[in-house]
Image (cartoon, rainbow, N blue to C red):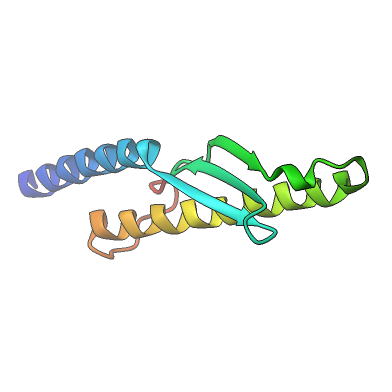
Length: 102
């Protein structure tokens, strides 16, 4: 029983370390061939939005809005993939019960 408690504490410590790594890590999502890019933390927080000046035309605003949404979705997918990979390395590939993920 003591060994199980010790393993649980080690897993909790590794998960806290991984959460800190994810907060510090950044991924970049792009859309429109790189005309719009969004930098997001591994936890899904948007850190920066870059828009190519060629899209700053009044008649292009709907395209720009769509590209921002697409870039955010791309960055989020990358952040989730990174988090899943880190989780797999922490848990050794073992599935966690619901509620114990990120």
